Length: 150
Image 1 (cartoon, rainbow, N blue to C red):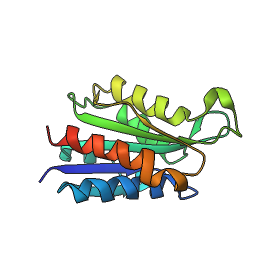
Image 2: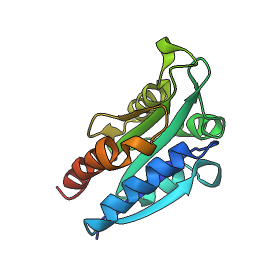
Image 3: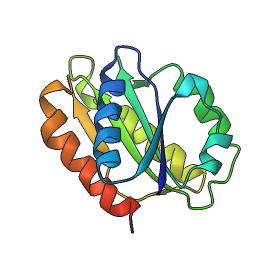
């Protein structure tokens, strides 16, 4: 079994809901998955996982979820050694269309700066994920499962 670690930040619950769907799909493919809130995570957790997904919402004018800020500061200090990773970003265009789902860009850039390897395009979820759980989110998770099993 492959182990995937999903580290997520969620204040309103939408990111957690999205990650739960991704976990469900991956587990249905026989992949062992652990979900962990970012405020309960350390960057050392990344080294133990075979594959990592970072997931965060965007607030206001491109601000990543607050609990990710100290985590990303610590991430700058390590070498991910080409660790295979993926990103999930959420956002709502009501805040600022220019920075809509900016969290996906912030997470992707942090992974690259730490020598990680994003193996697929980020999942970008606009507004509520509820209507996208069985469509875009499920399809993305199925694509991720194929990559994890390579």
